[in-house]
Amino acid sequence: MGGAVSAGEDNDDLIDNLKEAQYIRTERVEQAFRAIDRGDYYLEGYRDNAYKDLAWKHGNIHLSAPCIYSEVMEALKLQPGLSFLNLGSGTGYLSTMVGLILGPFGINHGIELHSDVVEYAKEKLESFIKNSDSFDKFEFCEPAFVVGNCLQIASDSHQYDRIYCGAGVQKDHENYMKILLKVGGILVMPIEDQLTQIMRTGQNTWESKNILAVSFAPLVQPRKNDSGQPDSVGLPPCAVRNLQDLARIYIRRTLRNFINDEMQAKGIPPRAPPKRKRKRVKQRINTYVFVGNQLIPQPLDSEEDEKMEEDNKEEEEKDHSEAMKPEEPPQNLLREKIMKLPLPESLKAYLTYFRDK
Image (cartoon, rainbow, N blue to C red; front, side):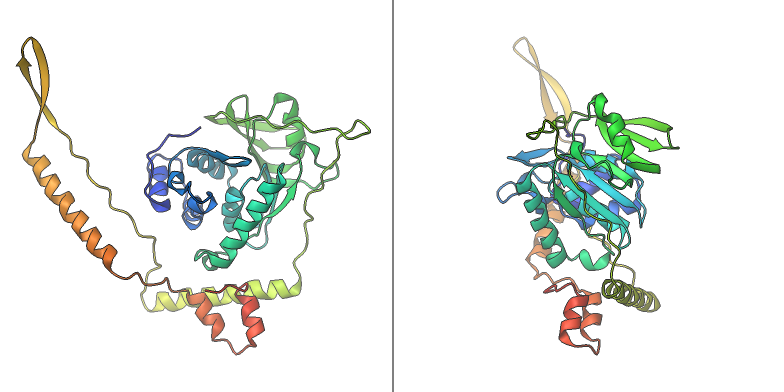
């Protein structure tokens, strides 16, 4: 499923294409997509396909097409502090983007059928926290993943503000999914080849809207144990943050606000991601000539075509010369502020989440 937008050369180029095609429509969703490089969730050797608007699968590892994730993120109408449940959380790509919007006081849970995929998701999450330049630019709600079948969630589990299911839901399981949702919440899932947004408007009332025609593999039916009943799966607990964790969140927030005020006072605008110049496509004007008894089109260059070729050549030379310049490492102002604090090194490491850069 996918192919709705043009392939990008990199993550930012892909996001530009999704915006242009109106799959990404809000700034909050755009920022989350730009902060998480889709290519980081591909196996080595497959990254060349990361910026195409196509689904990807290798063994149990699966990523939906970017246009699908875009529609899901927009339909969920995410806000800071909400609780989110990802049914079929896979690589954790979507859950990590969601965590950038929920912030530190949200809840971000995922359940995934395959244990090897959960391990893969945890590795990718750790890599994002330790290595990504985006991590220090956002307040993050870290996802927690469990192994299990989402059709076996324990009956006494808590409800969520937002839910996404990444597999085709049979009509028989629609009500089961709805029960997991709080009143006022939003559930997005594929039902009968339609990506559907369901809003719970009351204890027993719902509003549904079809978003997009899709094709998803169906949910895997639960296996039964020796007693003939499926085992129930417990979701992660909704734990209250401890004082140490709260202190880290507020120290980082205070320093981040101080940096923003400092930059604003100096008239330094926030650094936007570099925009890739789109190469203009040359369009030919055809003339037709008779060859024997056949009418054959012959390309005819216009003066505009020739000028476009010259402009494209100049842009390529400029891009090449810029690429040859040594790239400066991105400045992490938050880390610099933390490292200057009069604190023991162990506390500084804690405030930076033990990141090396």
